[in-house]
Length: 173
Image 1 (tube, rainbow, N blue to C red):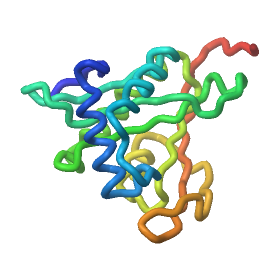
Image 2: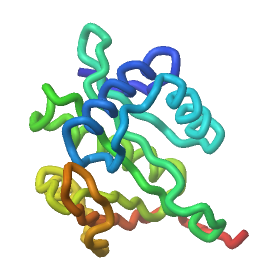
Image 3: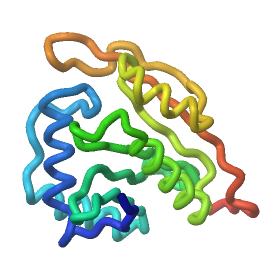
Image 4: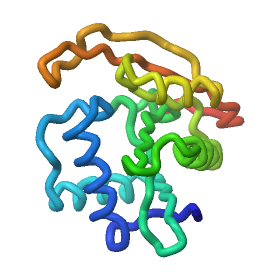
């Protein structure tokens, strides 16, 4: 397994497949319908335009096994040092430490890019993701009860945050 920067050309299809599996079979994404290949064009354009990294884990044959990224937390200027991250691992490779490896990589990217706070929005019933975040130093920052409705039931979303030591000299504006 090796970590690589994901590109639209090489990884959009695999990222789409991982996301669509999560949409269809889990509450990791509060979407109802599979995303289209066209949606990945906009997704990657947003990542590029804002300098947001997408880190992937490939096997020895070059198959993408998972990815992590982050994006805008809220679209107001004073939130510029806060990001909302995500990590997804292909169904057949979950529980083997890949999520931790990807999270460590995206945290390192955040530090290198002067991020101060990383926020993860996690389905409150997702004990695996919550445990991973807690082991990596994330703390529970609050839960919005019944924030989503999927699979015929209300879903609570828990927010976990990690405060980083960066930036050394934050500025307004």
